[in-house]
Image (cartoon, rainbow, N blue to C red; front, side, top):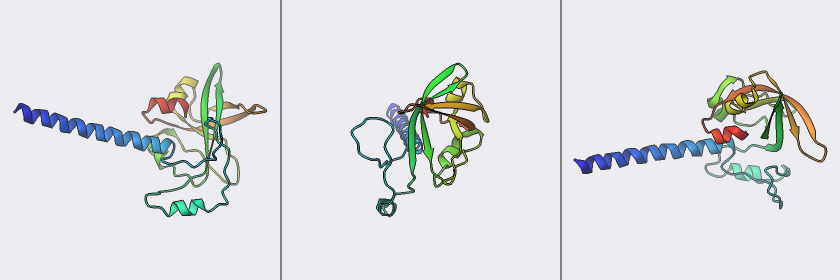
Length: 173
């Protein structure tokens, strides 16, 4: 009887571990990508220089097995400022072809950002953790400061708030 109980407990534990591993893998793939192609330069910055898009690699990669989609993106480190609170952030710019299904599942308030290839929008989607720390809600205006040769300030509107239940990711994205 004790051997049967021990084996049952181990099987349940393995099932829980496998399920949790799959959930983490899905979340990491949703926040970033399973594979990212960037320009190879000698810096360790999270920001990467743009790569040319007139080469043939997107069509070749999309023909590979298990490739679901390919998205263009840009990342920019900055500081988000509201009232007396400032936080370091990583802003991720996405194209019109982005698959929002991952974020649709986690959206708790508001709507997904409007994205257009022909005009720049100022909608942002933020995590619930960041919204609480900065005292923001949907339709709130938030100032972002980008550190570059000439520091740049932009004003954005919070279009939606998501909850991923991965607090470490929610703190910076």
